[in-house]
Length: 420
Image (cartoon, rainbow, N blue to C red; front, side):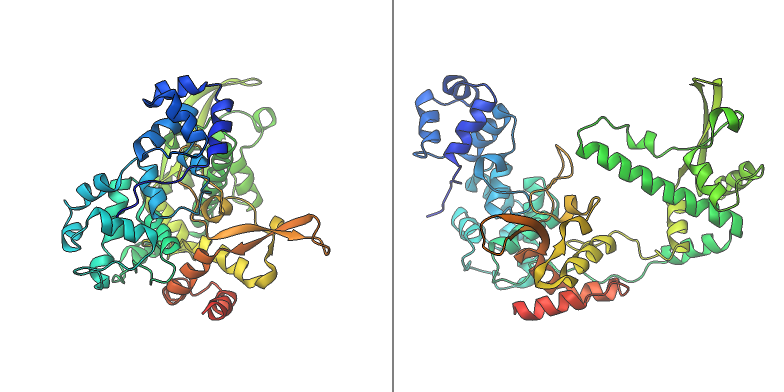
């Protein structure tokens, strides 16, 4: 028989209800059950259905994971279904409308067995090409990225091979076009384009940090317009950050406007102007620049990042793969906690999420406590690969090495061999 329920943590439910300032009767009214049933939930005698679990999370202003006790980055297949508020029958009804659902003759018992990590028997279930299409179908009905389903699959079924492998595509000519655009620029124009890209990346990091601290952020269409200059004496308004970058490179002079407009004519930048109020200079003209996709590609090509295309599901970007390699290189003792800063934990670390409404991280690394010699207290934390992180690295290692040859994967190779 299929298992339709996901156990919640009763004590956690009671604590979240009290934090929200709700009585049992009020919570019962909001989720459509009796007060007695809420009492049963909080004593562990009953578990809510996926739909009621969703309503409960909404009423308590929390995530479903907070009720089930599943940390972000540790979700299994059943957690994704419950987070979507679906019963087995509802999920199967949607999946049976897809070609892969029909090919696998999906039923509630089969989906339950899949979620339990047990062997699934039936037509086409031994065909990896057919089964490999199922994560995309699950991702669509659950409203999550395919990579989230692939990671949850690997946690749920650790003995199975990875369900999805990237397909090798012929190299496109976009990289050659970007390099050609870069080579068509003179040295001064190249310097400008590269510094504008670096300033955009710094601004993106600042926006990211504001989101993680729940601070208001402007729309991308606004913050991607980088402040280039204020038309006022520098001794009054100072230099912008971008001007300081160009001054440091020795290319900020009266010819700056001509250089920027030359880049705009090549459709590598867009220029916009408006009038703003400055506390010391009054009304001044503000000049902002925004990189186009073509300009961004050309700058990356010029900086040796021409392989910047989006990684195929379920691969990581070169930057995040490099972080995984650093953690693995640290060996069994793990990487110092302070050695890994910035945005990487929000993409890779267990328990992290990019923002209040964002996706959980992939859970490939975790902060592991280091105990004192006598084991009586924690002296610190170190980053280590999680089991699914190690499995991911081992499954896709050859493909990563082909795509990102500059990343040293010696540590990952050693850990993967030890894990076999």
